[in-house]
Image (cartoon, rainbow, N blue to C red):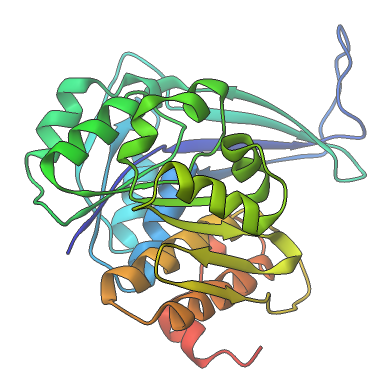
Length: 296
């Protein structure tokens, strides 16, 4: 079983400032950092590090070759990544003030150049039973959900960032696996309690599987046959940037391997705990060997 992640590939430019610039104000920055990111990239790397066979499909801009190289270095197949030279790569300009608060300006760039033809061409290389992983940082998400469903693939949706259009789309009925946090769960279900979020989603989509992450309260999985929970592993928090993406990658790898749900939740929770104890996004994602040997 193969995982196809049709997801975002971003360059993040982080500027450290005394305070976030006000309208009309020009500020010096004490330092600038460039990071490779995007939920798509992070989740593909996490899947690969967890031992799954993962392919990434997407678009990079004229300045985005480092993103493709980073995926390849981490064992992700990149044959379905195309470069478009008439636009910049998707990126974020992030101001971080002395108190750690931030202001973020997003440019979708090449991530919004995925077409229905790209989806069809890519899905043609996969089979019924394979997994399509999607977030909400690219174009053609709704089209890809329906196309993959019609092909018999398993559709996994991490609905982030959530939008009103995504929450109400008719294609939700074709999603096999929801991986979401409490806020996203509330936006889809209208409920606030974890059990009610899961129950509401399963009432609408009874054959779905719901993976709900609960921050400091761990995580909860529920479908029509299984209910499972796992607490967090308590560690010193350094950077939470890739915690959710790490969890998603390890969770899907566990599903692909056919691990018991309790073991899958344990590995995903431990991997995300290791990630939050390290700086950075994709560089913080641990290998399977690190996760299995960690004493937390």
